[in-house]
Amino acid sequence: MNKSKEVIERSMALVAALRAQRERDLQRRAEWQKRIELSRPIPYAKNGVQLSLRLDS
Image 1 (cartoon, one colour):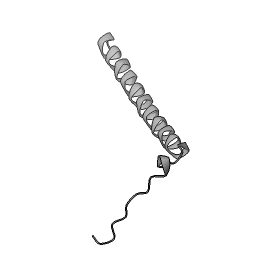
Image 2 (image 1 turned 180 degrees about the vertical axis):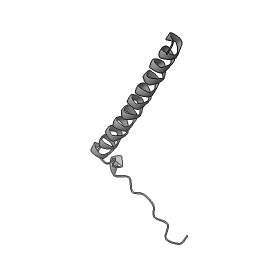
Image 3 (image 1 turned 135 degrees about the vertical axis):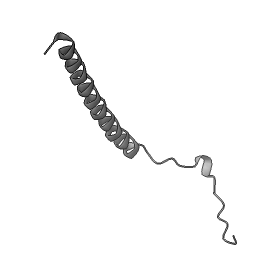
């Protein structure tokens, strides 16, 4: 095998490894986003604001 084919194979292997790493990072980031969303407190209305509930519609 000549040198150019070896270089191409190494670069393709590097691209595949980087793609796999990027996919793992995206999956890990999505898992952290879910954890952050679950750990946030529920927002409450301030100053005792009562929301209207329209039952006639």
